[in-house]
Image (cartoon, rainbow, N blue to C red):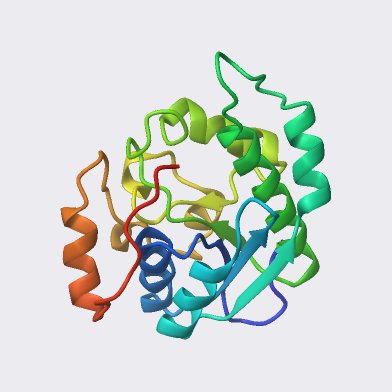
Length: 195
């Protein structure tokens, strides 16, 4: 999964929200070449991700995943629970597809703006671990905003990313992200979604 040149390349999943933007900018600040991938279905569009790309200058790849998404909804590996909640399986599907794009296009690792503990169902340690393990890219998913609260990834061990320059944000407070946004000069970003 190593890129061919000397430049370290990272592919991020982008929702278009502030956390995605910050994750990309934190890695770019380390001199890493950053691109994003985002997905569209009839249930959600890539409009926010397109705005984030224009705002930050981070290139964006958009893929329509309606067919595999519908298949996942019909038979989610995590099951339905009391109500339909495909978050973990949806994230797994997206990381699988992003990982395929990563391998085909010479990126070194994947990243996302997920923050440990921010969402009670999908951003707990067991949930993040489930997604990583079932994506097929175990060890290659970096979460820059919470990295110091999570196990070291392969790109960190390989020296592609400086762990000490990553963050240890956790919980539901948005203050650390808002402070970072000010540091990066980001003054327009969407309000966080409900998941």
